[in-house]
Length: 131
Image 1 (cartoon, rainbow, N blue to C red):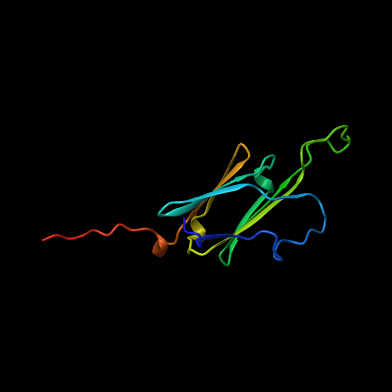
Image 2 (cartoon, rainbow, N blue to C red):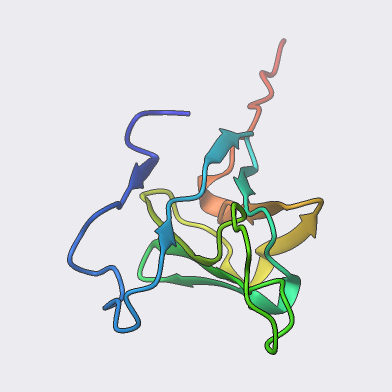
């Protein structure tokens, strides 16, 4: 992956206003690139599929997720180590992508995003004629 293909966008003014002032986490993300796509693997422990919002707008991929409290509402914690709050992360993609082809899958607390490159940005092998 070239250094300019993807750019992190952390701690910038475009992070949503934190009105509820809850706990915010930066999810750990691994990204790799093939000739046809980018693969993002984000750790989102404790997040349920309905609490994840993934969007792509103006070249920016945004992950926004929430970990809900696990205890029943009528009970209070005696001891709490498990974090609740929001996960938020943005990445700028400088390579054109096929927005309609983006796929997301959540398994065991890991979100996998497959972001296909636009047809004109894919790697192609050029055949050489002989004779």
